[in-house]
Amino acid sequence: MGEWVGNKSGDSMEDKIQQYRLQVIRFRKQLADLETRRAQCHHPVPGEIWQEFAEVSHRLEQAEQQIRQICLELAGDLNQIRTEIVSMLEQYTRCREQMRQVEDLFLLNIVRPGHHLKQAIRQREYLERAYQRIYTGIQYESYASQVELEADIRRVLMYGDTALDARATTSDDELLQENDLLPRLDETHVDDLVEAISKEALIKEFKRVVLPKVHPDTSATPAEVFKTVYEVYQKCDPLLMEAYIVKYRGEIGDEEDVDPLESLDQGLQIRQRYQRLCVRLQRRLDRLKQDLTTQEVENPGKIQETMQQQRKEILARIQFEVEQLRYWRDKIWGLVKIYRERDGSPGSGE
View 1 (cartoon, rainbow, N blue to C red):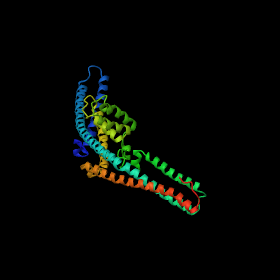
View 2: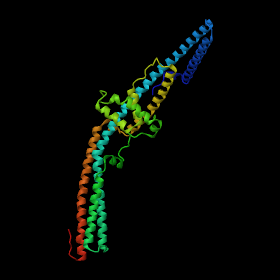
View 3: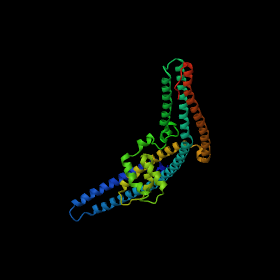
View 4: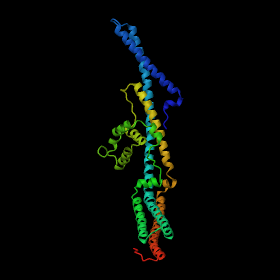
């Protein structure tokens, strides 16, 4: 993080700031008192008042100049911290896009087919249990007639199909959550929420500063940049919104027409906010990098190749389970024949 020039001497710079601030206030008060004395004097105004007025004015100008110099140094430090914030924001965006690509590959090659495999296994296990239950029921004389047996079989097979169809409609987001695939790194850390400026003010400032700079109707910003920024806005991510505000607000400049004390106070407040933002953004970036393996960073092609191979293995397993489902469905219907042979009565069958 950027180090303010004045901080090189430790706490002494903070002492000097307070000293200069008190000097400015004192000299301004002295000038106000002199102006009151001058107004109360009968003309001509005594020369010693004018002399004192000139001396105090000169000292005030010197003290204010010291404050302005501090503000210039502070602005330089703020712009250095801003550069670091923008750099981390760009790193985060690149890493997040890389993570998103990995997520998409994982969803396509592993999660979706894996979900189908899981459901096929569940249905096969359900049919296995149902077969054993019905077979035991036949042995225990639990069915009063073949009609009752066939009705139970139809319920079993219909329930299995319905349950499988219902689970097949699971959304991608639900699949990611169900498989605990990757941490939701876009979601704000609790510390980010605690330290961020108020949500209402943040959104207002984001709409005022950032959106006009990236929107296709008001800027020449590439569409992919607008998409990334607008996604942050839609998710109302306080940390990234604040970082984008810092980026698109631009560098801090010298405002000569502003009261130097007000400029100093404003600069110190901004410095504190920038430093906190820098720490929080670095923490978010570190969390993201922890979830990007070395192979994902250095050899994304290998990741895709590995996932495609895993996809082939999963599809082969699915095909095996599909064949098992046919086997168990036929085996369950075969229980009707076992019932007839045990009972010795003609069956209605299917």
